[in-house]
Image (tube, rainbow, N blue to C red; front, side, top):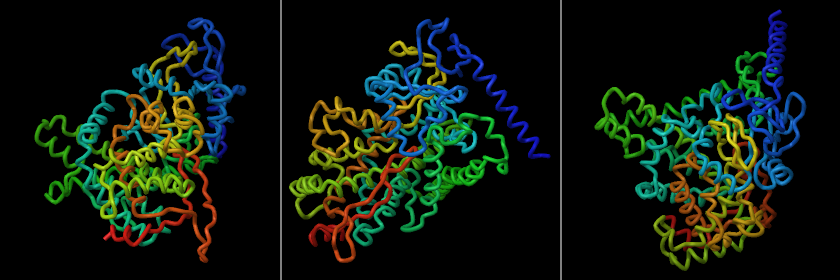
Length: 527
């Protein structure tokens, strides 16, 4: 009887959704509801259409057009077929989505019209069920978000990041020793490196050599984001009432996933923050993001606002941990794959390192200006396989007209980073290939400011810190090791086998390769 009642209720809700969303087919006048299917002409905006896109189906719009694997290939196809390199619009059960495929249009929307295009969408899965509203990267645009961004910007902008050089370099040196000891476990070592750097910078915590609980937990959180951040992956994001169905209800398997994910997210935010605060109170902590801000707060702020500001520090620290734990490992994994596939690039980089450093020392971050080819490799790694192919989605805070097209309020806006970073106008020919030399051309854009770290006011404020981590890792690895195809037990090489992940992140799946010291002289640098 209970199941029958639930099914009847479910059917009634679907019927209600239909009459609410799909009965009206016109674009709304200003200030009214905007959840409608495409239409050509309206009274408010006569002659205006939505941007082009795949034709919607009756009732469900483009629900069935969402790709569930290798998403970037579908977005590229849409860009070529409908967007003419600019805009593609789809509608999923009344929810408007816009894909921005060119840097010209991205700059127009995210920078020049940033007051309209800097908001974030609030989705049932990410916000209501997983509770990611605390993370400033997902927060709505407004004063609360500005508090969080200021806290991060003050500690990580370009002129102050040198204070973190020792942490980045020391942990990178340890990465080299780990790679030398067990190169077959390189992927685990990369995860350790990323976590070790961000945990020490953020919380003053030095992670355990193996099976660190903080790092193991954040892997669960990253898996949640990878899956939950895919447009269309969970039906609850287009039918929000599904968040109320119980776990046992048919088709509610996502609720069981949420239960485990939500606990991991809570632990990731709370546990390291409380550990850092306890060490500060005991006088045993190292200087770090959390303790610096807590100390400043205790000296300069009144009790009436401390609670909110402590929350800002905690939330921002959690966002740093979340972002830093994956961006570095993903980029270095792509770099290692690129070195396997392009041995000439590797040899050229090693020659530059040897010519400048000589045989007796490892690189420092301060050497960056003297190692332009290594810098070009970092830029090419960011361009060749950007970590987030659609960045973090934006949302329009009011309706807009762009190149004669109507963009409703509440439209979810995706920057198609892969498409922009493969634009031959900005990056030269053969953009599907890994060619660091392209970045010596002054007309080639910097990927870091062309979507690799996000867009407009919502671009990653820690991008300089991330670039420094990648530079010292790439340079150090190439100074000590040769990277090549995997080998059989008899020493014979065979081609590397790899694929690319589907989901919010765009990274190579773990692959086998050979990592060996270049010489005994190079190996002695690890002592």
